[in-house]
Image 1 (spheres, one colour):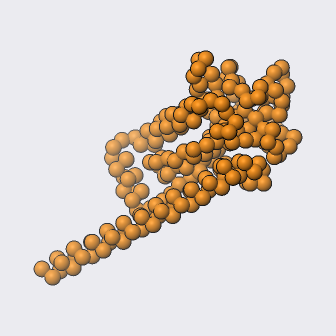
Image 2: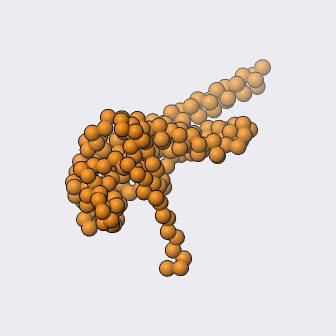
Image 3: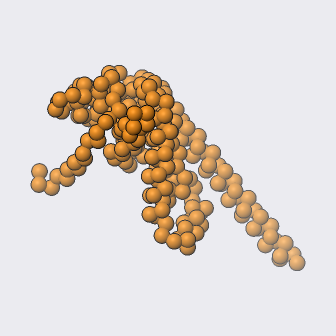
Length: 212
């Protein structure tokens, strides 16, 4: 199609492989409005190709479920902490997420006055968050160290349990959704209480002034 937009990315060298297969990580980040705060879920989904990483086979490079022959299979979907032997992968991912969102926040705030206006706006709103899915590759920077390459940031990541293995549902999706619900409930309750307290204090001060 003439109007179709294609994104072509060069595949990094020295990929970290799983069972001789290429894989990518789906990392979930909960992002607050204006990127004021973010929450990184403590594990990730690992999607692996259906073929070993060798030659020029197309399947050896594809790690996206929408391009695979099967939808749910333990062969190429799993929980990262269970599949990866590396003990430092999550620290590497955490640093990458911190750097990316720090730069994003800096680009949104042009000066101190704008930052103050945003803070005032944020205090008037209830908790406003968005769930993002970051797709990442692990690459060997040295023999013992790894680094992360971001493939894309998904604004509406799928959390459809029908496309997930039992392990992913139990270890990642359900705990993550439950944690988000609890976080939103707690923050909104606290915000509402602080708002009521502020209004009450303001009303009391006005009444005292009138009495005087």
